[in-house]
Image 1: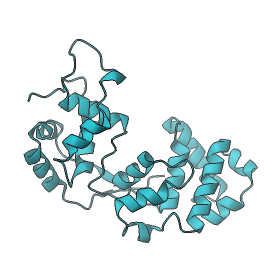
Image 2: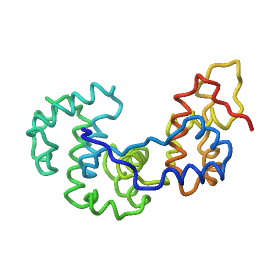
Image 3: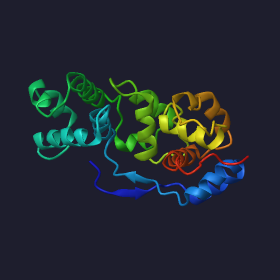
Length: 229
């Protein structure tokens, strides 16, 4: 659950200036969207954040929120400790609305938190992005995209580029690719990872900020978002 938001730790105004100077076409998008407004979600422990991520996977937000609320209620209105989650019978977890696969994923998350694979909040703050991705993707049901979202929206890391994200691929296509003006946008028009990575060489070390603006390009998709060269 989110109980407040905090500003990112890096200098977003500087990031936007440097991105616009390095990539004028991205600069046009930044100017059109306006102020960078990313706020960090309240920073739970990695265990608590990943528990929520697992619950929300492949579910409508309201349905996932209801399951999370039932789970927290079952453990006294708090996130359960890893030990308590492991000790809970399957029936108790399934009664909260968790599927069998998510129950297994949460148990694996708890076990890997206890054995140290999933670091503490204090430890993860000192770790480089690559090590965080390597460690957390060892957990059942946790892929690279989920960890990238944690890096951007929980830890406030400035240089994360989720190239497999649908919104990033669409926002990039709308901003940088020559798309047919007479055809509605479809999956065939999405940018490839290679296209994004090549362009993103200009965006270092502010790929998270660039990513936020590409998501906003999707929001503005109905307003002639293809920018001139």
